[in-house]
Amino acid sequence: MEKENQNQWILGLNFVENLGRRTITKLIREFKDLQEIWKISEEELSEQTQIPLEKAKSIQNLDWKKVKEEYHDAKSQGVQILGYGQEDYPERLLDINDPPPI
Image 1 (cartoon, rainbow, N blue to C red):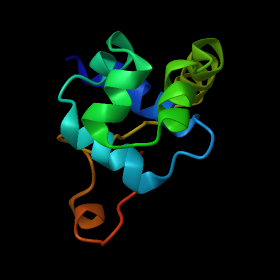
Image 2: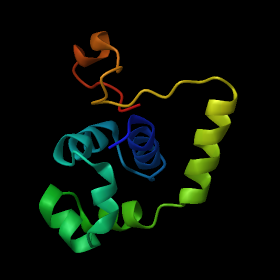
Image 3: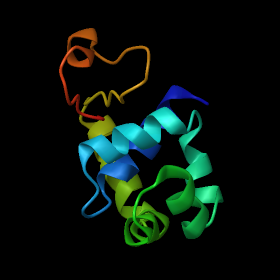
């Protein structure tokens, strides 16, 4: 998947209430194409990833309009968004115990 789109999906996960960095990183590792997260049911997501059903529901009900606005605002201000798992993600961050997903 195109890096820019993948980073939008990662940004979206950061907008989900009560979804921590470790869970986001786990999702990034489990889904090579993060868009797939939103193509399966809440129940399948919960079962496949072992996250609580309530969190899976929160992920599935994400307000994408808000995410896209934030992403485009960042780009228009020259901010580069680097997502965990992307080739340009800083190597030094990979060395820490709990690296930020974005």
